[in-house]
Amino acid sequence: MLLAALGWHALAVAREPADPLRFGVLPIGGAVESKDGWAPLLADLARAIGRPVTVLSVTSYESLDQAIDRDEVDFALLSSKLALDAVTERRMNVLALVKRHPGDADHRAILLTRKDGPRNSLDDLLAHPEQWRLARGDARSVSGFILPQVQLFLPHRIEMETRFKSEVIGTHQATALAVANGDADVATNNTTDFDRFRRQFPVEAGRLQIIWRSDPTPQAPIVVRRGLAPELQRRLRAFFLAYGHEPGVRGNAQRETLKDLHASLGYIAADNKALLPAARLEYQLARQSALNARWVSEEARQAKLDRIEQAYAQQQAVLRAESR
Image (tube, rainbow, N blue to C red):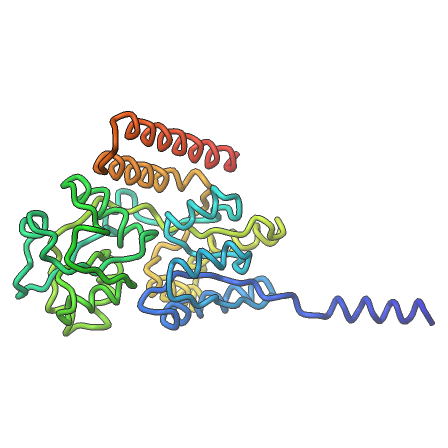
C-alpha cells in the first residue's frame, strides 16, 4: 500500500506543470505594446519546449535591470549595455544575436527635430545646447543615450545630462512624440524605432526630420540566466536559431512575426564575446566624460583614467573567459 501511494505521488508530481519561463523585454512604445509584439514568438516557443512562457512587462530599463538582479527573468532581449552589466556581474550569458546583413548599417542612433521648429539645425544645437529642450532615452540605452553622447556631444564638450535647458527621459516612442508635439526641441532615437513610429504615428512623424546619424549600433543580444538548466538553455538557443527558417505556412507566419520584431533575418548563435563592442562604447563614454570633467589636479584626472583602463581590461577578460 505504501509503495502504491508513493507510486501515485510520483506520478502526480510528474504531471504537475513546470514553472513558466520568464521573458524580459525592453519597452518599445510601452510595456503592453512590447508584450503584444512578442506574443506570437513566445507562444511558438512554449509549444516547442512544452512549457509555458510569461512576459515581464516593464516601463523602464531600470525596472528590467532590477528584475534581472532579483532573478525574476530567465531570458531576455536587452540593449547591449544592459546585457553587458548582466553578463559581467555573472548573472546571465549571451545566447544569440539579432542577425543583420553583412555590412548592414540600417540600425543607427539618430537625433530628431521638428522640420518647422525654431530650433532644427545641428549647428545651432552644438553651438547653443543650453537653449534646447532635450528628450532622451535612459542612460543604459545605446541609441537613446550612449552613442549620441560618445559620438556627438562629448567630442563637442557637451554633457547631455547637464547642458540642456531641460530634459525628459522616456521610450523612443515617447521622445519622438515629445518633439512632434512641441514639448521638446530635439530627441534621441534610432532608425528602427523611428520606422515603427512612422507607421504608428504618420501625422506626427511627418513633422520630424533627422539631423544626425551615428555609426551602426551593436546588435541586440538575447541573454539567458546562468542558473537555468543546461539542457533548457540548449533548447532555447536551438529554437531561436531555427525560428523563421521553416518552409510553408508555419515558416511564413514566423517570418511575419520576425518582421514585426525588426528581426527579419532571425537570430544567430553568439557568446559573451559579442558584448566586446558594447564594452568598448562604455569605455569610450567613461574616458571622454573624465577628460571633459573638471578636476582638482591633473593627478586626480590621471588616477580616474587609470581606473577606467583597469575596469575596461577586467571587462574584456570576463567576456573572453566566459566564452571559452
